[in-house]
Image 1 (cartoon, one colour):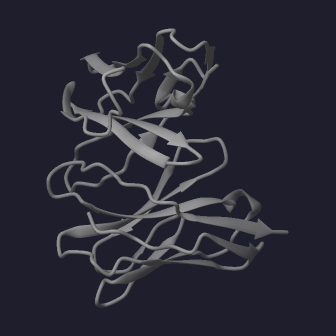
Image 2: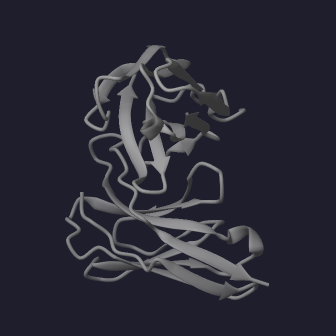
Length: 112
Length: 116
């Protein structure tokens, strides 16, 4: 699986949009970009995934560049409960549920 | 659904003792994963099962670790003998093989293991 690079930490003011970047320059054509987050002391939680089109769900939006070498997760109106470690993961899904390789992620702190 | 259930939530044991961690996946899920998380190594996949069959155990650190899935609703991760370096949070996760395929794994609350 392609490797990802994320900033180790970020701060965001409560109520503002949080934009979390991820680089995956070696991504291959059949690999998807997944985002998970882990709130302190809990198991990771799936947020969103995409292949090449931008995606949106009730939790977040995912913007993938046209060359697919980077992406941005957007939390449109961050709340204190969004404080967590966010993991960007590249994974194939065409062979069933491939294993996920979690990196070090970005520790996002929402500031009141 | 209650989600993925793990027991115990906390385990403290002494070096050399056998430890058994338990997991009940979400009903109907086809895949079950065991992860370990430490400050030094982050979140690592140990082993995963598909329809109760082990698919990839390359992450299992050594022969002291073993995992079984006797049926679709139960799995165990056993450490025998345990060592202090096994201290970590162990997570179990399950997922559903559906169409279109999505690698959405549902994680349990974890078992915090401390080996003295």
